[in-house]
Every structure is written in C-alpha cells, then in structure tokens.
Amino acid sequence: MNSIPKTGYMRDITGQRFGRLTALQPVSRGKNGAVKWLFKCDCGTQHVALAANVLGGRTKSCGCLRRESSTLRSREMMLRRHRERRAQNG
Image 1 (cartoon, rainbow, N blue to C red):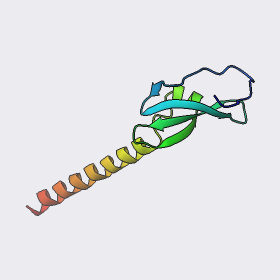
Image 2: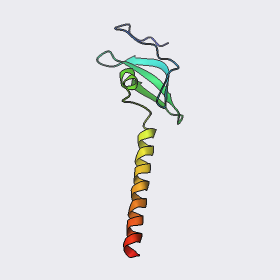
Image 3: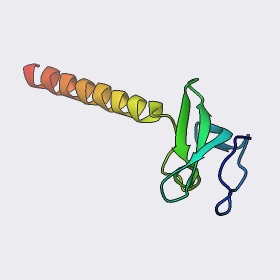
Image 4: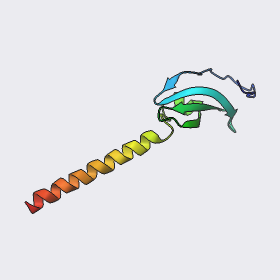
C-alpha cells in the first residue's frame, strides 16, 4: 500500500467491486482527509475517485456508463423521431 497519511479511519476496500469499478489501491487523501482510491473499470480504464462517492453509489464507473447511457438515449430519440416522420408522411 502507498504511504497514505494516517489521519482518520481508512476502510480497506481492495479487490471489492462497486458497479463497474474494482478497487485497486488507495492513492492519496483529499483536502478534507477523504481517501482517494485507484479503481479499474470494466471497460479497462483506471480511474481515481473518492472512496465515499463510490461507497455511497454516486460513482459507478469511470464515466463510460454515462457515455453509454447518453448514446443509447440519443439513438432512441432519433428512432422515435424517424417513426413519427414516417407515420406523418404515410
């Protein structure tokens, strides 16, 4: 493990999965003492996030989940518009 300052309690989440993220190792502490961890996402990207955000469910991936959801919503909207136009034009 890295030399993280020993101020406050640090839960060891190494190897645990949270959404698409797997905890690898603690990296540092934030300004308020919150622990930042290095995670590996299912898409292969490594991502640093606050443990509190991951444990609380606010961070579920490196950002790939949001991009995928956004792309899917865009495709669904385009398909819906296409169907409406076809229905109007007969």
